[in-house]
Length: 341
View (cartoon, one colour):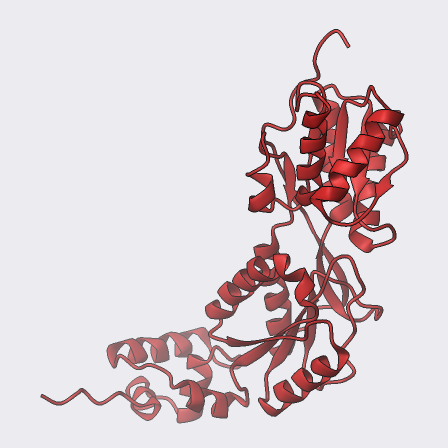
């Protein structure tokens, strides 16, 4: 029994009654082909069970069919997987594949990765940064389109897709106000970093709209459970009547909740607590589970891919930072303020 020979693009062109070049353009979704002609070619391809050969298609289109994903620093690995999943899903829709490399925060390794991607003749590059730090701009170092995700650069013409952390902070504070909380504090990560600054601005904006201020100065520290516990011990001494704490991350919130419980405060009966990130190992394993903000990282990765492909395809997609809305996820760590306070 012999295997059936695969149909060729030449046979598709002959059946559709068009030239080989026109058939190639129709199959590859290129412009300058009428919709009637494209439909005729695609019908012929279906009838012949024609499957485009990726290598042949790349030679015809002048593209490699691959993009590079460069992870600037693996310390941001918490954000890598969901962003990659979104990017890969979007790439599969346009039949592109991805080469992933991790620079591990090393400038020399980053340069070597760029050299490798240049040799592989990738069609474009996605750069996954860290929302807390400035991402190095690579646009001047390589002659293919570059789009940045989860981190801004210092170059205003670079396209960067980042979560709207100010909006996320605003959502959390607004939710706590809606539950009747009025003595609200904020415990966050390292001072001066972008995400910390933006989230704090959003919290203060919501409180200001309600005619309120934070019950205590913002507490800055590392992204850790230990810091959350230390911060809440100090906070209860300074502001014993605090009734809500907005935390800069789920990890910090986990420590805040355990610190409150160790001090005999109920969550949420005495003090409501919110996290940020919707990171399951902390958001769901905290007792009670955390009200938090989801940055929708899969959507972020997919949006970055769409911009990258637009540039590769010759579209004008503009430049600058694209802010993406976050989503409030309400769980048991927040609830109505107890009456009779």
